[in-house]
Image 1 (tube, rainbow, N blue to C red):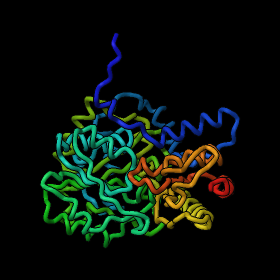
Image 2: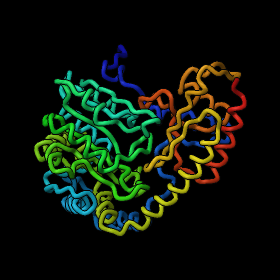
Image 3: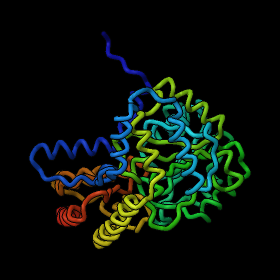
Image 4: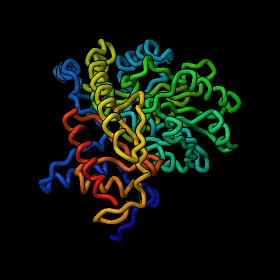
Length: 398
């Protein structure tokens, strides 16, 4: 038969984080000792008490299909978590559990956006936002803030980006890829702008909520005039080191939650049963293991930002959350190596992989071609070695 793929998939970009991680694995398969700092995955194992809860759920027979929006007991635990941690108050019918927070986001895009609608995306952004919006035949509108702004978009920038076609605002805090955390007063100021545009839906991705070095997390949806127009997306992957469990959730106005559940019913139905039971245990238990992981991330952030900050030409800030640095390395553009010129962040990331055997991700994938993303979800030993290799590789550029 004739091989013919849809225009949709032909126009869709491959995830750069997954692509670079595969290149790192290929290089390692050739016998090289690669330090992979490209993937946004905790290097910790899921806490034992959560794994035990899943084992018990299997023994108890939780092996069947689940309700599309999630087991009632998990939605109840999420409802209590939202109220306790975020001052967000959802009914059970306003909560949808999905196969990862990524599916929650995709559900919202498909449920709310029509062809030609505009969705404002604070940039740098997580790589899949852009493609999800395009998949819904909508138009991503990128509003950029560089390292000199601590990667934070201002209220004035937001106001200037809004048009008659704007239907959505999408951002993450703590942010992937920058680690930026919007403070309460900053989110309040952004919400003031949105007062004049009541038809703009806000999608707040809070998957890194528990990896916050700044203090208590603040949700934009808790602001009184934002409650009925904000979707809060979260999940278990980052704070509980449960990436492979594929378990995420969202709280949204009831009409939108119902639409997202309808979409999910046709794609995947409900998330796995025993994983959801383990999710109840995770949310209802003390956060001791999560907070210990957070403190280790804090130490790694301090270590890596100090070491990279010493490299000539590198602009490095100290982010308040997540487990990434997003240094500006544009000072090296138009320099050359034995492999050729460094024209952009793509070339720079390839150079580090080829010459230092350190895998990072080009900032181009996140909407900022001056930077690279470095994950410090790795041991301190590997981070120190990676910095030594990077420093050595810098001497090969002229």
